[in-house]
Length: 372
Image (cartoon, rainbow, N blue to C red; front, side):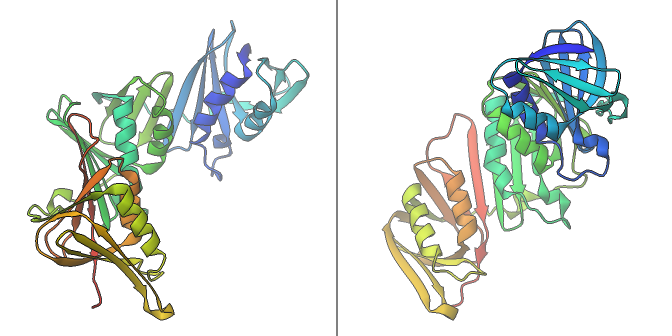
């Protein structure tokens, strides 16, 4: 078994796949990349049992075979090479030899048969989504997903597909983000919960791709195929909470304000907030927004005034500044709208501009009780 491949091309593909490998694996074989050689194509895979990802590389070879190569060692040596062709030869003594322009390096390999096989989905449903749409949907929602082991369903992103459009939701019970597209549709109704890890890997590669992503899914697994990659992962089992029920429908108080201005102000004032509650107070009257925070234990306090466009009754509402900042940072628009009904009901943040046709982003932030 022998093949020739460009060093930087191989490194780039392996760095993507390396995101799948855990730092501590229960099965030693999972510390390896699986190399499957099929004539002039090399399929490299990485797995952590839950998620398996493979990349197909075009190489120069006439042989076939499979070996598992130590991931960490291979990446370390590849990072040191300038761009050049490398020759990989599988030797009799259980080593794989890499020949470069300047030397030879031998790594011990494991038999490829020991590597766990990727799940093949039986009778899956299929939806096509442009890479750019999926990348935006994931980056707009994933930050709001929870990381509570006791509530695994909330630790991922909820995908809801229908002939009307696609909806992506993430929540940790303090904040919620719903990202919807009506310009991309699925042929039938389906929903599933995607874990965070494979989504983070996808987010990284999709940002630079202009391909169409084929998503195939059944009750237990989902597969994403695009460009030369295939990612298969186990879905989170369970029923997602009814998120529509927590989004308040009647919100008569509407505040329109410059996003960057509001974000900088919240950032500064939050420095003076209580370090455990991160509580800031918004006091709105007429065209004036007053943002304040106080840490009574240390006698720290701050207050800022901003002008805004406001329709509604005068009100005071408290928010966790960390959640508010996360949301404002994640939005890209120039102006944002904050809709509220009462100080004890969730506030709804939406971008007032900069959205594509058929795209909506709804962010919900739970208030915190103000101690008067």
